[in-house]
Length: 133
Length: 74
Image (cartoon, rainbow over all chains, first blue to last red; front, side, top):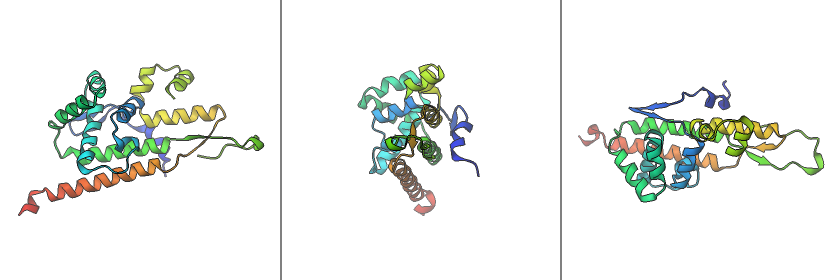
């Protein structure tokens, strides 16, 4: 069975979803998700209403498919960002949402499996090897 | 993280921040930590909660889409 940690190295540069071509889910776009409190993708929120979930999926698609400068300008202000996402969502077919959610889940899965935390070494046993992960 | 990876790889900030997939970046970061003899462990429940939330969102949408189909209106 393939090691899931290999998966991020085998994905295409751009991800097609419906008619959109998404840029990679990168550290920069993760920062935008954090800034605009998109809890679905940052893991900061466990209770999100259905409407908010759809909004956040659309926001994710907007962040990764609209021109970069436009996204960065919109992301600086909550109202401007919400307006940009809502305008963008008007152009998206509803049929593309399930595929988008599956792809986004796969991206988050890959990021989650890759994330690690630094663990303090036991001072008394410096000769021990690091725990496997 | 970006500073450390830029230092390790020599790659420009733009590449690291916008062009490298996040999961791949995290793997490179992990490798950099291990190569400097730092110990790393898997984080706790936050990733699991995130995936669970996305799974529930997907199920909720599937139910919503089923309710909205023309077949159901008949």
